[in-house]
Image (cartoon, rainbow, N blue to C red; front, side, top):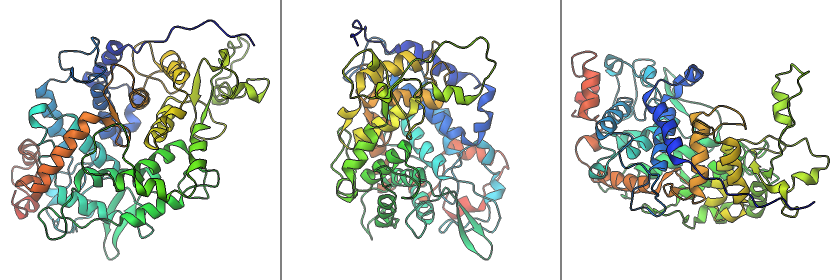
Length: 485
């Protein structure tokens, strides 16, 4: 086939995307998000993280004139948002994922702060994803003057103890923890590689380096058991799944790779070049197959045919066919073909024979970047696919070509661009999925908590969050008095 004429490279319209995120931040989200009420902390993370990615400091390499000079989130609003995040902290450790799961203060009066044991059934609804998003938000919302205090009010000790209790005997992690009368602790949530990744992330963000007997030391969870569980989950074709007997998935591969790299990550590594993780590189039994499996998630995106005016079918099956079943020969989807018009757009899927999706460019690209092989992502046509097919006219990115934008895919469309070094975006940390400058904030905030500074180490909440809780009842709860709040 003849080569097509040279196509101009698309441009990321930062101002348009910031306008979309400003709308998400300041206006109520559409009714379609009601089913995500239980994940409100996650929605906030997608919005705030995206704004930070789109607004690198002027000193950052790659910052352009498109970057706004006026803060999209004024300092006063940052303080209010931080107060909101801290109000979700639970006395037994961790954070609730939404305001509707925060109990009135009298619901916590029977908590025993050292062990998290409770006499009141149902009090305390912290979950693992909500805790990670809460910690990331606190760091994302810190200003330059308050970076060391970004985690002020976080109960580091209780959160790490709560995290340890979420680990199962096989090394995996659950999502929630409940005390069942007469039966002890019950770990809820499925066997999900995402929980393993989140546990490793929270541990790196909070644990620090004190040794047993030193101030700030907290008993660690079993890192060897977690690594062993993850490594056992590699499948026959090289990918990762919930177990070696399940179907591999690109999101699980990213979570497995990132979790392993975080388990032995130094406390101060703020660079896009991943550190050489011995657990990651020496532990995976078949790393070449993993890299091959990830690289094979790419395929040439083919335009769907014009809609048939005589068809009234709206089934999802038609939408899923257009990405990979149209060519007359399977080779038309191959990236190994000579560079021609068939490689104008390259998309990624999460599993074999599935359709393209914005987020999989991130899960695949982020995983390859963390393995040190970002060059295996066919980036120019992948970038073109994101900017020409998935970016929406009002800003943000959609799940499928032609769909509406949503905060999940809009955020991970940006992380995919950032991890590959898109000009004008913040430098991204591939393992934690936040800007590198935010990781620097996490490092300073963790160091401040490890040293211990009153409320930060004893488990109290910041004064603003306390006032919110006390106003609900008018008196100080017993658990707060017990820890010196």
